[in-house]
Length: 114
Length: 108
Image (cartoon, rainbow over all chains, first blue to last red):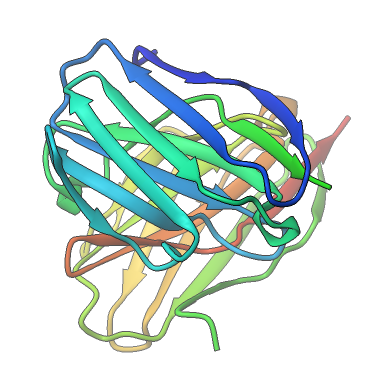
């Protein structure tokens, strides 16, 4: 299995608090992604990174920010969590740009915002 | 309308059965296609790519129909371990668009 670690794996927080999820990889892959998964929806891309300090928005980026200061770490921050951000968050990595379809996912972080 | 549509199921089948899932996509500019598998409360994993000529991997066969804009996955001789959610994925302009998945439950 690809070396991807997400932390925390589970978190319960209150509306209005900041939350940071961390993704750490040991594969030295260039591309890293944050997705959210909700019932009835496919995985939706929040933000992605194509290198250190190089990031771009996905389709559901409002309310989220990201940072990548090292190849191995990609952080997702919810500046002020809302109940609509209750979801399962998956980090993914790929060696090449998405075209091959080979994304490797972390085990997910389950976030509940009360 | 979602860009990638799948029947959510569940498809309940006995061991040994053949089962097929379809997926439709709305954007004709989509370039490449995949099936991912996701076990309950686990992360998705690539099952197979889908090629224009159709492709097979053991008991799994994937087909693509560009004219009708649908993709199919056929599983033969179903095993209990095939129970999972199968995600149809489309690559459009180097962005992967995921369907919400079709759930398969194989019973003894």
